Image 1 (spheres, rainbow, N blue to C red):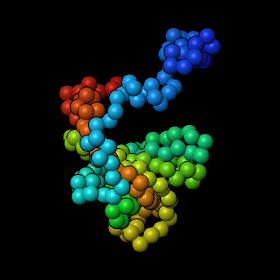
Image 2: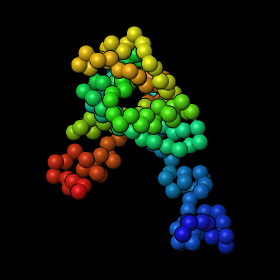
Image 3: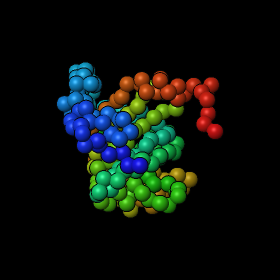
Image 4: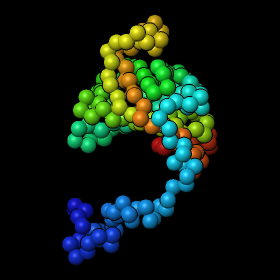
Length: 187
């Protein structure tokens, strides 16, 4: 059965047929969340810092979020040896495309909508680095040689022009116990 809004209620107290109360107001959301701490807002920047570069140099894994022109979303894992993300300058990153399932969902999305987000993790570490920007797909560039692995240059690379960078607090990793070896494994 579809989850539609009950027509007898409107606004922040509207209830679905299933009894769900749906939030649909930015003002109500802000009231529930509260104002962000100034230190959190001040952490957002548009150029790589030494700390950001250090995380990128140690990270073997990131998640790439994209959406197509119609808003359909995709999140795709990317990984390689630590430091696989090539830093071109303080505002530009490149990720080599390595052989995978050949679906290319992220690249298809980028062709219709260049906005992309990267979320970097370091196994065992507490840093979570988010990088948002505008992506392009390259088939060659002088820096492809630097991204070669086992003598093979990538056929494609994602180039990200940075709009914002943010170092998240590690609370989500702590709550999830993500790096604890005794964490239960999914079956």
